[in-house]
Image (cartoon, rainbow, N blue to C red; front, side, top):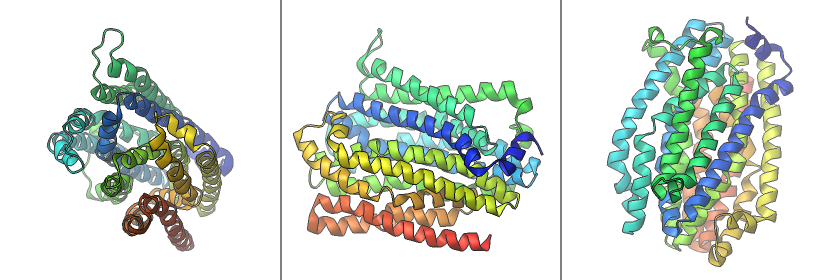
Length: 447
């Protein structure tokens, strides 16, 4: 057993989770900052530009969903194999995962070229918005290899407990994006002003930079890394591929759900006004400050849960879940307080005018009521993925972001207007959390 495996099996859970989660929380906060700043720069181009990027967000999120979802499948497979001392299986999972991520990238080129404009025309007939949205969409979809392959490497390193390189890559990628945003959008230092296309170029440059860092790091340090990524391990083993996608597909669907949800809610909100669509877009930018740090905890938790599950250390699995839940509740409490106390200041970061403030302030306050209760769904969903059980994780996410919230929004909006849409968020979180608690209790009894 190497030092890393010894640490995963014997180090006190609180200290272990802090050491694994803090780098991820830091990098996720940088990512959150990038998302906010990116939107602030785009908002300076006008409401049409912001609406265009908001409408294309579901397709952009679909790339992330496939990247992260499949990466979680790779992560889970490697962590469990490492915990059970099956190094060859871990190597095959890592190497095959990288090749499959490259194949996914090629498929997204076709998807971007064929789906971008038809998707935008589903929500608007404004030619300016369609043109801006298409410019942004073509770039982030057709050049998505930087995201897809980078995230696969990210999950491989996380599976063996190496969070430091992930923190460095995510931070550097986000910083590059933040620096390049105003340069490409507004045309500084002799660059042409590309508008929303400039924001897209900055995004893919940050992603590709991150991928390059991973490749260089692995090449220099591969002798000391416990998992090998090599063409000799690219074996399309049916059992391993099934395990990768058994977790990866539900995880991808789970992460893609916001895309489906936002598109559906946009179609409801646009009937009230385009400003309601913009408010929803702003909310999804702001909530990254809350859910991405929570995601950092989940990413730190997954390899601990997966390794100890593979090693048969069930008590450590339970302890990890309890500590992770506590951390997440604290983060959600802070997010709730900010949304209730200073919603105006949050909205003003996006140049919100008086009409947008009138809509956005009550919206943020209502939606934030579900943050704390959502902690159970967030943590338990991630735990099921770490245990290699994609279906319970998918059930929780479907309840949070599709099955309950969409019909509830539709019905409540008939009686309460847009307020009914905002109310559906906390109600859905409450129902999903109750189900997640029941499912996890049953799973722990079986373990």
